[in-house]
Figure 1 (tube, rainbow, N blue to C red):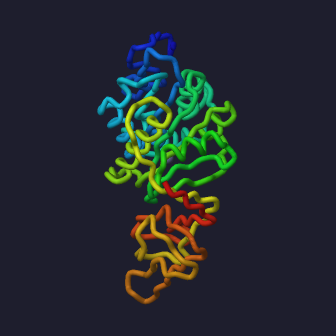
Figure 2 (figure 1 turned 180 degrees about the vertical axis):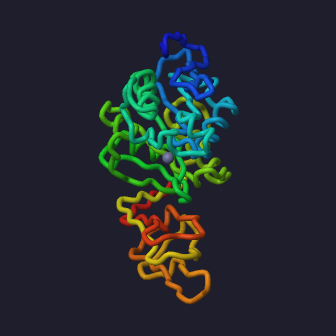
Figure 3 (figure 1 turned 30 degrees about the horizontal axis):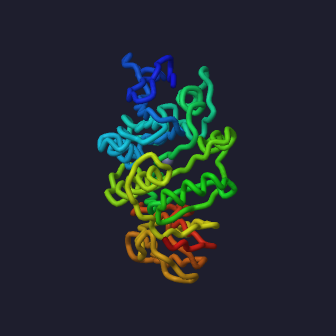
Length: 316
Ligand SMILES: [Zn+2]
């Protein structure tokens, strides 16, 4: 395997640096990929975090997986682990790059484009041609807490199989966002799943542990590691809708994220600071709350609850 002119032989582990740009101070910015190769042939898995620089749970999941030596003695194939793709966002506490662009809306990217386009291009050029499948770790954005879930393209049977082997509490079947990593992988016929757990800029132990457990289940099911990792029960979600604020003010939720909800049920309330007016937010469907806003103050139209419906229960 050769990444950015660096050769990594079977049985070898190595760190590879891919230069993407520099800070205004002149400090060079690299993407660091840690590569683990078994002597035995097999598929190459990408374990990616920090596409959004403020989604720290994902970075922490990949870091802990590397530090716990999960990939060091794999039985076959190779693992490429990249904890932070968006280094700029990571040091600026930001989802995007300093120019305000989102890497996950910039694929496949070009070497002469915007910074986001260049970072996307580095992954597209150096890593995507090498991998057989992958998992991309995220959290909710914009103060949304996402209950641990895998998002997967509804028509991609191979990716759905990966999701089932990961076995998170929720598997959300979705479409593809234009210029996203998943879209580019789909174009290249690479099954790619996205894990979402917790909220940006917050470490959440539950979401981190669910991410690590799922990664171990997936690696065990695919024959990378030995061990009997029990699958969890899963809920597959085929449809979803947002419940949005109909009034601006203080938002108080009555629900715990992850809970089931009935049509017409009270989900929370929005009130002005003086207590003059109060509106109760009601669910418009039967379903499950798989994402919830932690914003204490909201504007009209802000997303409050992500409800999944049309569900299938898988007992494991
Ligand atoms: Zn994200």
